[in-house]
Length: 433
Ligand SMILES: Cc1ncc(COP(=O)(O)O)c(C=O)c1O
Image (cartoon, rainbow, N blue to C red):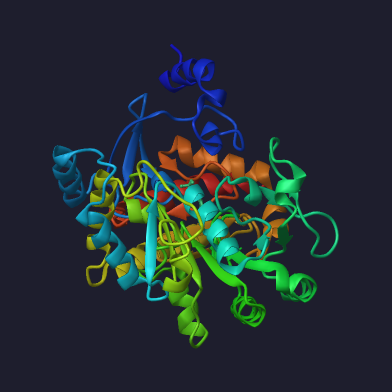
């Protein structure tokens, strides 16, 4: 009897390109059959064969409370009863905006949208509109959604303009996007020296979760801030993944602790602020945000923006994560997982490095933590894939690609962490050879 996941995958492939609605779900990087999920609860989800997995993707970040948190479910149910969507303003949108601004003091105003892609794309348009400049800087290995201007990889040589990473993006569309190496101060300085007066924004994942887990070094981040200020460019933090995930105040609160007076000019958010519903946002200082329509000349809009069910879900999620001790406990759980995996890898003689912050983590089958995309991609993909499948067979669902971060939720208890480490104890020795 064929696996029901495979039956569904075959069926899906006839009507959905690749059988999935977002590429990484197809398991192309690791091979094998994607699991079709039927339901989820707390730290687990179940596939179409009824097999249970400890979930370390958490919908790729949003599910910080685990699945089906009762307070969130209740808030969503109540909201649904009052109506799905109005296309007119609601009080909950104000409440969510006020909450975000209170938690991220670098923001004075915020606009709600429906996906991280939309938020990133709109932030870039606003930065260009507000500065009157065309160019943007991004870093290799950072992902800011699939807007045309951001689907770019580095060209050859120093500080060159990038090449599209997707068919359908004409080179002219990315001619204003500079792609630099993450954590490379010299390249950054060279780019500003050459193009400073034309740079509208520097967009960065402060902890890059789309090349697994790579922190921007403090000197590098300090230089990003200084150069943006000096040249009148906007420093845009993409906290779609890190926001309300690595700390209540996002990654920006961590850099503010290490760099006196530090703050980004704009912030892009998603994932946790929607608690699993389609909701994202971008925000910044009033003078910049007031350039947006209907006040200013920068157009941006959305039929489902600030959706009443999504805002209820997001608000309930943000309410829970603000409780005293929430992040301390989440971070301790995540660290316990990271340290446990590392200890097992050391015992098995497998090169392994791991890092975590709040409820986000990354591990590499490399002896040292990488600092940029090229170093991440130097890791042994075959080995990672064997590890991934070994863990999956034992009921642990890590991200199905070596360049993706992992997520622990507040519902992951000691038992789940211990079960994960135990599975790793069985799998890691098979990788040593
Ligand atoms: C840092 C970052 N920015 C933007 C996005 C795009 O968000 P969405 O998938 O909601 O469009 C993602 C998605 O993973 C992300 O991780």
